[in-house]
Image (cartoon, rainbow, N blue to C red; front, side):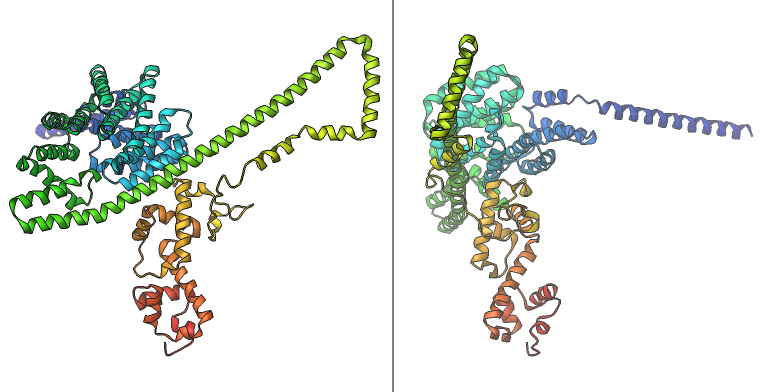
Length: 612
């Protein structure tokens, strides 16, 4: 009995202990939850900055940062966390975090947040060799940020544009943009020496060195390299960029045919990176250096790794084209005609795919950035000219007012002549009204309304090409009350205005030329032809028509069918499979299903012809 009581007492004590532990744990969790609400995100940001040299650790802390920010519903901190992730995440994951960054930023409806998000996403896609998407996002970022009062934000989208120009060989223009951005941050760090400014400064300096190397501007690079190494040494929070900086130094050496020195620096940069990224840029130029030194066997593994990754992922830098040429030359020297022929075919396939992509990027840069920028500069000049005219008119009006005030002052001052002057003025006014001269004099000083009309007439319509109107029928979701042809571009956000206009024009051409009759039409293939992505195209179609892609195409085809039936009554005599094929439907069954969904009847019932 005593033993039983001891057991019960022991069991009770154990139960009490467990309850106490549970309560203490609950109390601790509650305290932890309460303290988490007061998380010092600034300290966390500083920790990430301090360990930024170790990208693995920086990314680990970044993930914790995002987790805590979400847990505490700190929207701005979530955005900051995703911004860090586009820098410290492995290259293969950067684009994913860039997309998340855009989604969170759009919720704020703040142009600066949205623009910075697109700029970060552009940079992430650039590093992932998705130049087409990088350009699209960079242009959107530039649209959001270029008019920002703070130049440091205005340059974010423009910076990726400079790097893309470098990739397609437009290095003179790329150097102008990169140099302007570098000079700004060089000045800015003296005025506002924050971690963000220091990071932007060294990053743009690094990129300028690479672009300078491409155009043999080694003189400036000598100065920039000395400046950059000194800055990194004195600012440990940008030590993360040392590996990148040494890599750029190596490229500068390579461009001067100093291959041995370049190899030494490239190998050093690879050791310093200490992360899971592939670093194909450094490996490519290691391969190039060994190839130039005629050490093909040591060059081989670097080029092989790049080609293998391309075959696996379908992605490769436009800069790495010589990798294919190496294998042609290598197998030619080996006398292996079979592998040489395979290498030739691989280069031809690369050329077919990437030459077209390079041309598309060059064309998009020209139309969406270069020409657009020139038009905007022209509009700004015209606006400035108008302001100057208004200033001139304002000065004239102020002069008249001042003169009138002066005479009034003189009249008041000379009280003894006041009655005489009033009598003279009254008499003169009477004479003016009777003679009609006063009206004529009034017309010589243009009114505000007259001046506005005059300013409009001064602008020669031939100087500025009017915006091309897109002949399409807008859905109710995108109609304006006052002007049904006016496009509500805000409805298309986050797609920028210029891209929307381009896609609407492409869709209008697509409809006008009956290209919807093509078989096997898919959203992604049509998006590629329109030089955009499927998400953008789907959104534009949805807002323009209120339909998804499949319904949009089907309705165009059925509208075409109705038009034919009105002009050609014999058309319905064709077999169902012939009509289906003509309209672009994959199978007669798919056509019949879509037909019934549209009209509520089968084709047979609709045509009232049992033989069909």
